[in-house]
Length: 264
Image (cartoon, rainbow, N blue to C red; front, side):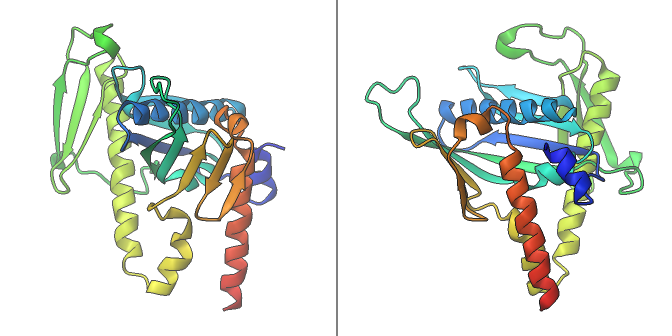
């Protein structure tokens, strides 16, 4: 049973699209390579679920990784599954360039944004400053000679988004607007949650704490999620996109939390 089928059986699968931002943290080049590995993991899982996958923006590193990548997954149950991925992900492994065989620790941060519908959020065109510029390809290749890349500044909030992966300026603008809407919705949701009581915030925020989310320990072939205190000893399978055990564990934990909350 895949996660999509599991969602249908448990009544989920309503929200269709999610925007994910992965950024290198500590660890230099190795962190950038881990960003690439996580993007590949999510892409493979998305393919297995029949979801669409569209890169909105990316910034490559010199060694073939990513300093950051922003992409959209669209399909039944995409947000419900991916919402648990936000936070700090840590990798422990021996880099290919490490001659002493020492294990290095690197981190990346992941932000998961629900893509809003037109009814979720309203953006006033007069609040936007839109700039165009020439996009830059990886390693200087395929540089677009026209100013097709888009930078949008939302003046009231100061938020800035960019998109340069498409050759069409119109498509890049559409992608950037989608990202801006998702970030504004996230900010609105955070503002709303700050008005809730402390107890209620703790109930709804357990899965979104970002201090230390998950550790990928390659020498021990183990992934540990620190929020639910659970480990899986099939790291190689999971990073190849077989993520169902993680998503199902979170779904089960969430249901248990709701049951406990209803007893209070």
